[in-house]
Image 1 (tube, one colour):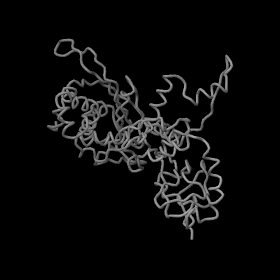
Image 2: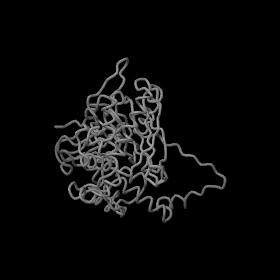
Image 3: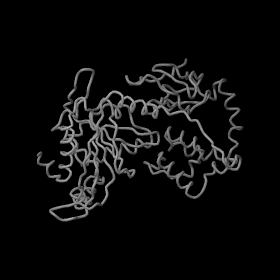
Image 4: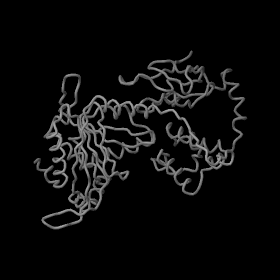
Length: 406
């Protein structure tokens, strides 16, 4: 008796997937619900579990193949590897493959490597046993791998790089090039950016905000906040709250265009742009207007961790009525963010700089940030866009306004 392993149902907006990594080979024993293969889509990496116990038989889709929903990936035969004749050749060849000394250490590290991290480690040619994991139960995250690589580079070339450098010497004056195909996520990002610029009338308005009041609140209540909620009080939760208050005043900014219709959303699903090793992703805070500051901070922290290890789901990445992007964490001083279709607005945060400003006729030093609001001019007038940004500025400079709903 055999059991089919098929591509799981894909979201409506996703047409196909790419076979990324097989974790079992024909002849290997598999256990029900054990991860057999990783499929890469436009947004996330899907794990396909074994539907039954048995032995992996014929594989229909190799790594790199493009597959669609319900397409056959492999067959699981009943029985065990020891009792299955087809498995014998694979087992007989195993000793030759086990010759390298590092195979044991890699096997020990396997339980703490997610599929995306395992792929990254393989591509970079690093030994996972030398990487200290900062995730739960010592789990190695992609950020840990990149930090390890940065450390190696700061101390000199990585072992793999040294070996390559010893084997290949680039002649003086050479102009080397390397052609690398885009990942599915990077290709999707490029497609959506072009779509936004070609279909929407994007305009950006700017302002600046004095964050002294927010900093005072954080300084005064940080210890109590951490003790009560086990999370630090950051800046993003204030920006999310201020944005929601502004969206309530200017509903067109929370709307979207569908053909000749304008859809006004009576809810506030705020996308928060998060950088990941695979590229920029925008997980969504559902019904953010009903969340507390602590709830927002906890969810954003979770999003950041799961973006690093590639475990965000489709549901968490789909939808959203407005987006906030914080380029300030990378040192950006000013930028013009691009819309995330079909949304009609996006807020760009930037670096906080201590700058001299005039207050009550005197020059004082304050923590200032430039804000950028890009919007679709087809449904949002310039007056609305400017006043929307001013509303955010006023809420941040006087946080009591958000509590008093004024």
